[in-house]
Image (tube, rainbow, N blue to C red):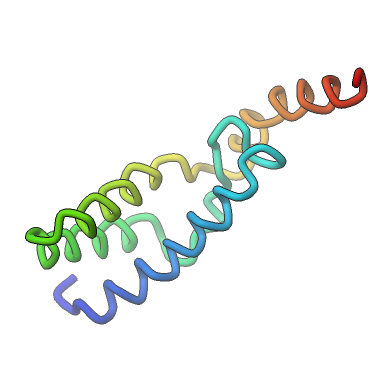
Length: 101
């Protein structure tokens, strides 16, 4: 991806997704398995945009760290049914714990 403007738009949308899903970790995604359908763009496009941006921001340590953290989260977005399967045991445990309070 040679267009930095397009890469930034993709990263901005993905960053918003990461922010919103992070807020739902304890209530929806305790296994840190997020449905792929939440991503605003295909995984490959997001990874390419992150790689492009990392080249441009190589001298900005704070931005580079943020981009790497976003890249590290990308593999956590998986098939929706698989994400549900991974999260459900944790959600069940949380429900039971809440019932016993």
